[in-house]
Amino acid sequence: MEQSLKEKTFKQMLFFALIALTMSFAGLTSAYVISRKREDWVSFDMPKVFYISTLLIILSSITFYLAKKAMEKENRSKTNLFLILTLLLGASFIYFQFQGYLALTQMGLFFTGPKSNVAASLFDVIAVAHAVHIMVGLVIILVLLVKNYQQKYSAVNHLGITLGEIFWHFLGALWVALFVFFLLVI
Image (cartoon, rainbow, N blue to C red; front, side, top):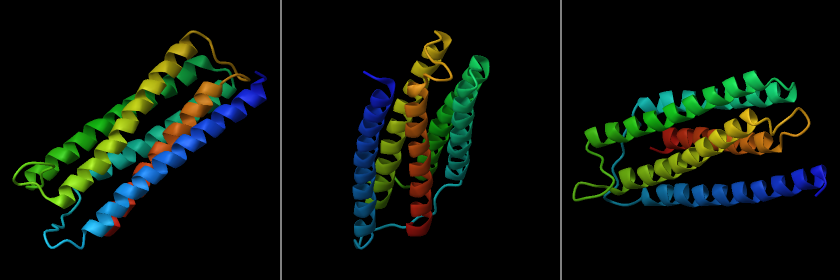
């Protein structure tokens, strides 16, 4: 398949997947808004640790951008460095998301069980669904690192890195949107 046709096809497939993900999260946030009218709804303050995870996901988007720019200049070592930084920042994001979950349970907000409530359950479902996609993104970054070490990418042939970057930026933007949503709605 011709490179430009291959790139166009893969980008279209990725964009369809991102639209589907957007619709899924739109449905989850809609359920959150609608459920706020329930009599048993419990409002709560978002744990501060989510501010840290938000900063980390933004920084990881910057490092991924720098990785792609380094690949466009055929600088493999800088590409690897920035991909590793993105990987570490993404893993730190997951860690702080888990710390946020623990903070919610310390506030008495449980996902399931006799002490659970709808607000915490929906919040957790949305955060965990996003975290699962971040974990998928981390696997993608690992694959990109391996392929870059194997010299499968070049300044003119880096479609995998481009697609990974689009997916990662989407996940970062999605979390920032969810974070703002929760700040406004909780």
